[in-house]
Length: 115
Length: 113
Image (cartoon, rainbow over all chains, first blue to last red; front, top):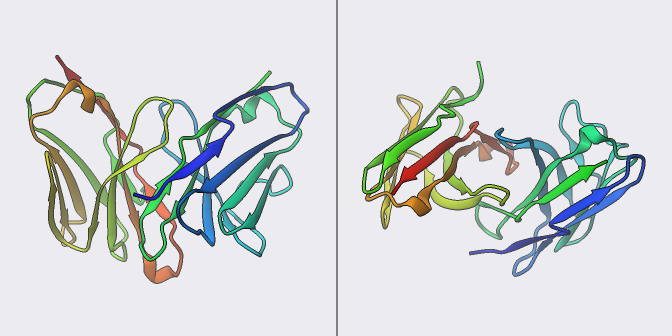
């Protein structure tokens, strides 16, 4: 199956700093990637759709100025959490649909802890 | 009413049991139905993918879709302790032109040795 990687897998930062999370499709190209967040024992909540070469589409209630998304190439999307606060602590997961299918493949996730 | 309903569990079964996991949905435009398995602190892993109605079998896993009842199921035969995880159903309506998925809340399964 298609492989999606994320980096870092775990990050701790101080309140007020910014954190960048990378999502890469390793063996396929992805014009679209999705960013989710997941709180403990809860389901995935879609934050935004990342589009290569154009602006990301954010879900209702997600602050676009706080969660900056850049889809720099057909294999890389980044999510930057700006001015992070403790309530931003969560598990962030990206996904991408494999070429020619409607199936999404997920990255392993990034655990963000803001002190 | 949520678009996708899934019992969060937890569901505990003895090793070797047949497990039945279910989701109901309200949007009749959904055509693609997926089941993902998620271990603690890991990303979801695709288990089964079904288009429209019918059954699909892969090893110990069988996925069923009943569009008339808006009901999907995942059966796990001969369950193993390694099957202990959270199982998420997901659905999509590709007529909207996007790949957006709607997820259930996930069912936590524990298979006891």
